Amino acid sequence: MEKMRNKGLAEREKIKSYQNFNVSVYCPVENINSITDFDDFDRRFKRLYGNVKIGRAYLECYRGLKWCSKEQLLKVKAFFEKKGIATSGGLTTCGAGDNEGFVSLCYSRQEGQDILKRAVEINAQVFDEFIFDDFYFLNCRCKDCIEKKGDRSWSQFRLDQKKWLTEEIVMKTAKEINPDINVIVKFPQWYEAFNETGYDLKMEPAIVDSIYTGTETRNPAYAQQHLPKYLSYFVMRYLESAAPGRNLGGWFDPYECTYNLTSYLEQGYLTLFAKAKEVTLFCLGSLIDDPAYQAFPAALGAMFEELDGFLGQLGDPVGVAAYRPANARGEDNLHNYLGMCGVPFEPCIDYPSAEKIIFLAEGAADDEQIIDKMKKSMIEEGAEVIVTSGFVRRMGDAFRKEFVNISYSARKAIVSEYADTKDNGLTVSGKYTGQKPVLIPQLDYCTNDVWELAAAYGTDNNFPIVLRCAYGTGHISVITIPDDMGDLYNYPSQVLGVIRGLCFGKIPVVVEGPAGVQLFVYDNDKVIVRSDMPYSESVSLKLKDGYSAVKNLITGEKIAVVDNGIRLQMTPSVNYVLEFMK
Figure 1 (tube, rainbow, N blue to C red):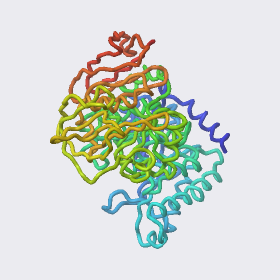
Figure 2: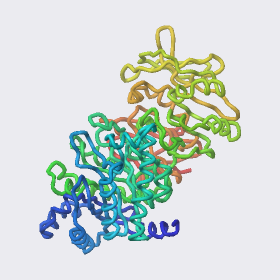
Figure 3: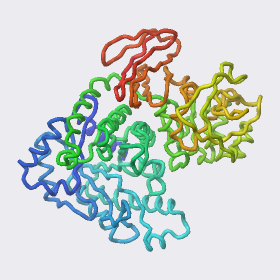
Figure 4: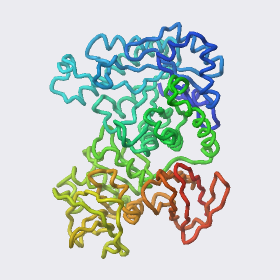
């Protein structure tokens, strides 16, 4: 099986419409069925391929109880292949919908199983690979599902059902028809809730041939999914850790992006910053026929050309090892809020025992062996383990008993002024004002047993924002996370600097400045700096000892290093691609 997978992936990766990546377009069933006059379609399709080099088209046979016939698929397949565009199949396993949001097929009923089997059969007969759109989830709560669930949780029922469906219907059906077929499951971007709808990043990649990643972030505030933009990078890397070498690409769409074209393009930038092999554009009809998105293809073309000019110079992504077990919950999207504050992460689905800096948000507490793993890292490896206030709350007595007497109290504080330390916590100093008042949990700790590296002022009092103490041959640090995690952006740059500084040992550079600057780091001393602030802002980059010069790879300009740092005038949504030289 593994040899077959590797052969298929090797052939697939030969298709590159750009030097460093491939671009695909997904074609829903209604788009395909609407093609009756191929000359007219070619004229409309040129709106996309006249701007963007398209290397693959995914042709869908089923969506929402609508089907595309095998004959029509073959006609459209021939059209694309005549243009030198490879084709793959697709299916979207949703029902028709009945004003209840997105509705999955019900697999507790034979009808749902038959639809799934028929769609797989058509794909396997026509194509050598096919992809599931990210509606391959389960959210039905009909009386049949309630009966079959029994006393299991909805999460466990759906995980069990999904495993059976994938093994017994999808893979068996596809492989019986076409033994060499590559079956791809696209996972959504809402990874924080995977297990509740049947997605499992341990089970499914072990069953299917390949996976794909949804990298849609759209509008973080005025949208149902409220996803910080850094997620387009983070989720791509997280799924790469779940299926190394078999995470075939990232997928994004234009919806909820008309308020700002840059918000659409940012999905593409961050997907490719994460070293995606392929980018899939959803969807054909929207990009060539919808007036709302008529400007998008030209902008896409310019973006892909820009990216192709420097991606080949970047090594592999690196960052602070962020452990998030499969099916974990807690502090949803915290990594992405911190990513928007300039903390670069390399997410891990397995505990990164070899790493010297390890970040644990609340979800890591779902690992029943987390205490033993932390102990070993700090005692034997001298690791710096960074945890959040949510992790401390979830672990409770187990954290206090083993590591340090820090607890998550029931008290809150509204804070707007802050301090840091110049002597490793012996004293706090300065008074720095945040962007707006922030509601934080109050952490209890014992003076002289643990040290404040950053604090928030109260009335004749202060509250810890960053705590740190020694453990074994390493250290453990605790970061206080505001109740509204987006309020991390309102911490002043001095406090953000303390948080970023905890990560400095892993990366060659740290941002000194306000939130809204993203940092992407690669293992060959290359760094991308990108601003999401709505205005220009001067920021500093502090470099590790040993770097004597910095080169802007886009302009060729050399930037002088002064006192181990450089200054950058950040322009909104402009990428600074830098090489650090020793």
